[in-house]
Length: 91
Image 1 (cartoon, rainbow, N blue to C red):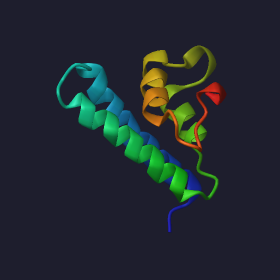
Image 2: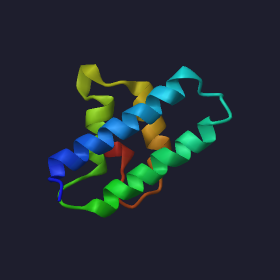
Image 3: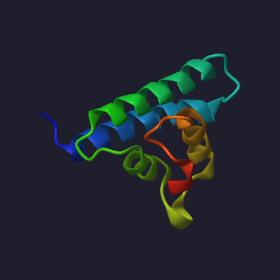
Image 4: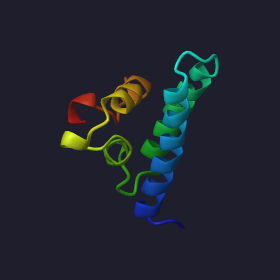
């Protein structure tokens, strides 16, 4: 069984790869599928529990404070909008 930290890091890596693909061409027809993948990953993280939160992953992928990547944050906020475990206000 993976530790919570390992699971968070694995999720962050997967989400980062998806966001990299979106950043290359956000208008690509595959972008719809990529955004759906972000939503699925968020659902997986939320269901995993064990201290793993969407906020932890959001901070790893998007950064915080002066290091925050607003474009990535906006993509994740949009993908995770409406999930009971997510509040973009906390990001």
